[in-house]
Image (cartoon, rainbow, N blue to C red; front, side):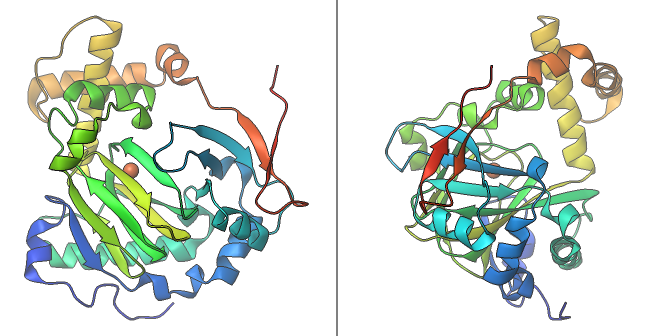
Length: 312
Ligand SMILES: [Fe+2]
């Protein structure tokens, strides 16, 4: 790894905006050898099955489609080629745990941000993933509970970031995400776009935004490689506890939560309750509806997929 900086063009406005507003920054991570096509191809070929999702999505403007698949016996290059032909994205989750080069890059990124943004604490944890997607791919309107950054490595994307307030997202939506992991089922209306900040990013650019801000992403007709980063700190952790506990109160006990306090007696009671219930049978059952793997890529016909028989 080089010792060069990740942010060469950071200015005072970035320090003031970071984690409060949607913000576009210039970075140097796309120059790392870890993001060369050769290294990405190797990474794909050996990627642990339980850590990746290959998803077929609808083209822009078509109705929602979401099927999960397997890379089959394709080489990393062939997978990249299949994705470049359209209709697919590959998410290699928690890549920092699989290859420490990516984790070190993100560690360095946060060290620089902590040094530049007063009050921003070094995240207690971060998880990075590499998302490789087709020229026509999109990510539907959703929100995430942890802090989020989107680092563009290759290709161009248009990102719509919406306010993290009602009607775009409500406390009940946050509770449902915490409880059921249903980020992509957030209700979306086209007129929301009038209230979005629209940011285009290309190689060497990245985005951050305020906690829980809903967003959606469209590729700008280019094959795209991005790194997504989610992170938690003390404030984010306390919010997650409140979201989960309030969701339990509402869904399990039929009680409408009255506060979102992050400190004091109500917070303490919620922290205890969600810890007791979090790993219990009820939450596990609510979360147990997983999407099946129902296609694989076809080595004989580049760009084609093969439907797998439905599991009984
Ligand atoms: Fe997201």
